[in-house]
Every structure is written in C-alpha cells, then in structure tokens.
Image (cartoon, rainbow, N blue to C red; front, side, top):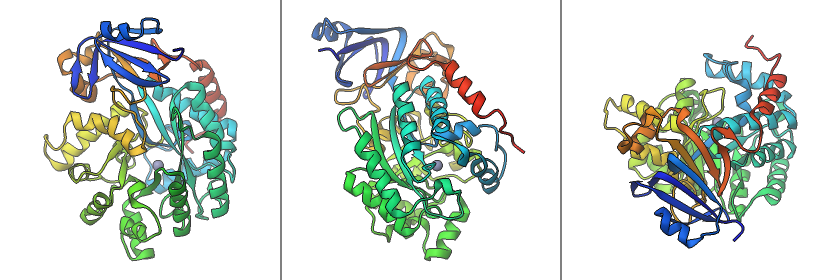
Length: 443
Ligand SMILES: [Zn+2]
C-alpha cells in the first residue's frame, strides 16, 4: 500500500514498559502492528523504512493547552503580576496581529514544539477579529509543519477585552461552524476543531452555553479556563453566588465533555464534582508557577479518576514549549506542594503528557500500540541525559535534555529529521519573527 511505512529503533517505550529493538508498521497514518523488526518487515517487505539506530522510539507528546501567538511575546511581559502582564503584553500587542502575523506566531510556536517532541498541539485561539481568517492561518501553519492540531476556537464577549477578541453569540457560532465544516478531519484527525468559551470572565453565561452547544452538535469536547487565579473565585462568588465549577454546572452544558483549563483554585467539592460528572482538566504547571497563579491539586484529581492532560500554555507565560518539561515540572511542583517525594511518580506524569492527554482531547494518540495514530519521537540513546538506559521512562521525565530529541513522526510522516524541521525552514521562521517583533518592547 502506498501509505505504508515501517519505523525501527533500538529501543521503544510501549504501554507495557520499555522494550528492546522494535518496529512499527503504519498504514494511512495509523499504527497497525508493533513487534520485533524481523517479523514486522516480513508483514510489509516493500514498505518504505525509517531507521532510528542508537535511538529509542517513544510516544509523541500531547500539548493540551497553548496560545500559539504568545510565543511572539516571550520575554516581553515577564515578572509582572497577572493583570499587568495581561494589559502590558497581551492586550498591547496581540490586537495588532494580522492573519500573516498569527501564522508567524503559529510557525514559531509549533516549529519549536516539534523540535521538543510535541506531536499534537491544542491551540486555544481567541484572536478571531469576528471572522475565520486568523484561525485559518493558524491551522494552515500547522499543516505546513506537519504537526497535529486541535483548533480550540474561542467564544468571547466580555467588553473589557480588545475588540479583536470579541464577538456576538451568532457570530461565534457561525464562525465556529464554518471552520469545523472546512477543516475538521474525521479520517486522519490531523485537524480537529473544538469550541472554547474563554472563561467565566471572558464569556457570558449565554456565550458559554453557545460554545457547549456547538460541542454537543459536533460530538466533541469543549474547553474553558476556570479558577486560574484566586480573584476569579471571588468574582464568581460575587456574580453567581457560587464557586467557578458549581456556577458553570448550573448552565445548560454537558459537563462530561468539558475540558477545564488550570483549576488552580478548585476546592475539594469542585474536584469531587469534576470527577463525578466526568469532566477533564488541561493542567499547565509551568505557566501556573510562572504567573504565580497557585497550585492545582493534581494528586487529588488523579486519585479521583479525573482525566488530566498536560499543557505548556502560551510562550510568554512559561516560557518553554516542551511537554517533557511539563512532566518534570508537574512532578516536582506536586512533590513540594504535598511535602512528599512520593506524591506522584514518573509513570503517571509521562501518561499525563501522552496517552491521557489524548483521551482528554478525544484523539487516539499518545501510545505506541495498534489503533493509535503513528505519532513518534526518537531520542538519542548516546545522549548522557538518558543514561543509564535501563531507566528510560524515568529519565525521559526527570533528566531528558531537549538535545536528545532527534526525529519526529506525525501520522506516519517524518516532520523532524536529524534535529531539523522537514517541511519549513527554521531560517524562514526566524526571519518572520524578527521582522514582526522588531519594535516590540517591555516598556
Ligand atoms: Zn490559556
């Protein structure tokens, strides 16, 4: 078959643990067989081969929450309180971005992510300018690079934000539906379009219900920022007489398909409610630490059975774009928060950045097993950050240097080879970023 490919490596991280020499056969971008190289090659002797000697193949990582354009603001709003960061960096520069500008931000963010082993990114996108052109530019940037994308198309109507973010409910619904019709890819799932009412402060209750209604119609999940900062809990209590999750639960929404983002200030009742109703969480420990938001009780949520996926959040609130880095950060933050070195382990954190994150986004990704999409990362076993090799999974979480990431495959197709993007030149991205941000400053 024309679309067959066989990828082989000296070691692999499979659902059951680390394995020796392994090959994967993919057809049409899906993994159909995993096993020892000789038997896999015998199944499809004519298939093109990608060989990864001295390397281990591990599942591609899944970034459940990002704002791609924010990479352009990296370093420009650091070390400020949340509202000052928002007003002096975000609200100042983001409304200026044209479709070409957001494409530059997306090429930059997604290109850097691929080089760090991210194979799926969810872009929570709110620079919509009452249209679809900006979101289209982001999707097409992802397609150029070859990364898998979830376009979490924002629904936003708070009039305190820049006009570029705001829409009426009919506009948001119509634009979401147009994007979904045009890009949502049910076959290979390289592009998914999901609705994302911004937050309790960014979207009115009716706007949140409209977003959740679009998710119901599309048969997919929806995203919403909740309880990131402590003041947002106080606002929710003042406006609705209830804490954030309880207030949202009263709306005409489907809780089980909700992906809450952050949840730093969810109390025990809210965590129990999230678990009982089957909602999930996009957790961004690096960003929460960077902005001084607070600490989500991840250990408790995982114990209650809530599905959690890791996210890097935007490039100007972290300021890194690596999900491997978030695995380490999640573990360290929870260990110090609980004052317990055994609060959470490497295996759990690895899953939050791969297969569980895929479940949060409702995509068959994040594991090297038949039935999953063929999204793989090669890491260099000659790199000292992965020694000793018998502790591969723990070393990926706690010790990995990004220098060790050499190759990336998305949907059976090479997108990074020998630490180089295959389909867009890094020089082009650099040039575009330089030109766009030449006069952007902190002051
Ligand atoms: Zn966010």
